[in-house]
Image (tube, rainbow, N blue to C red):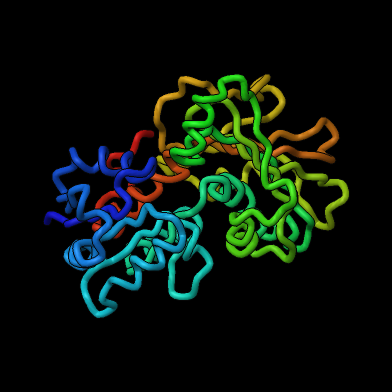
Length: 312
């Protein structure tokens, strides 16, 4: 069976990458609009309702507008890559390793996770859910991303200002990713989120530091690592690395010339006395953090193996 897919917002960073990768997949037929029709509401509505699956790669308001154009009684299923519906009622969060593959496969409305929350939730959600870390701890998350995560405007800025090495932002809090981090992880408090951009096109490192000695009932670093390994056992996308002292890498790196990847690599490093831990996720912000995640959900919704066409 060939599934018809319409990418609304196909000329943005995420939309372009999804389109390029689906163009070679015989399981999918892309519905496309010419430049004049992309901004025509009637043409967009026709394309949205002609699709088996519509993938929205739009700003939040435009994504809500697109959803309103879809006949709720029609056949079109939606994957929304914007922030608009990640905590909205009636939407399934598009992280199959966290919410379950069956939930994605059966869903009509899927909200693609944010890139930073993907790393944060991959590390924290299974451990909090298993009772190995407390729900009511004031967690912090430090993260850096390649500039492609900011879309065309930020890509152009880094090209225009090549002396920028690091850009910290959201300094007053209130970043739009915090709500999904708190809700999906089941936390009592919103985490303190410190995002930054570095001078690399793609790639992302997300770190959650843990003061285990001060946490009531917290497990040891080794137990946290073992629990993550068990949770992701058999996954071809998420990889939990051996970071015991004898096997721990001396450093973790993001490369400016990193190739596209849909993998998600997780590490748990512990101090000598087990009183502290640093949990780190490495991923491609355009892969598992955006386009790759949408394709993984699309595969499940189409009844295909979830890793089909993924770069892992």
